[in-house]
Image (tube, rainbow, N blue to C red; front, side, top):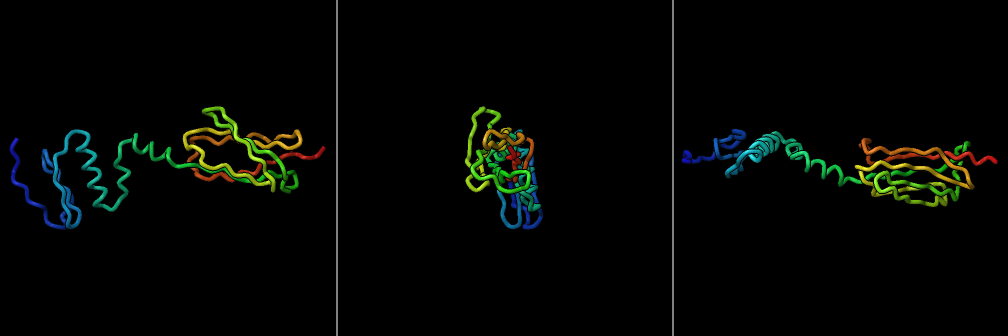
Length: 159
């Protein structure tokens, strides 16, 4: 396949795509190399987004975006309180991983707790216990995109 001789586009003329070859021109920098099939469409999308000043991650294939999303960790924190909203010192807080069914525990000496480095793509159950009493179970869904959860767990400590 013969191609016409290549000349760099003038600075500021925006991206240009040549059949069988790609030419990207963003300001004064240009790049030229072969592109085929899906790679060609990714190159075109990336070039357009770069020249518009938009994040390039929008042009990545779905599996790469999913990997980036899974890499983000979540944190759940809060306090264990009684009906009067006073801290329950010495309560044990449990976090159950819905995927592996493993359970982490944390003794809230001052009534507060924190679990970090939680996977974004996993559901969790959270509850607290103190002297045989148990709080209601709170669910953290993998569909919830927040990275930080502040959840107070209420235990009825009355006898």
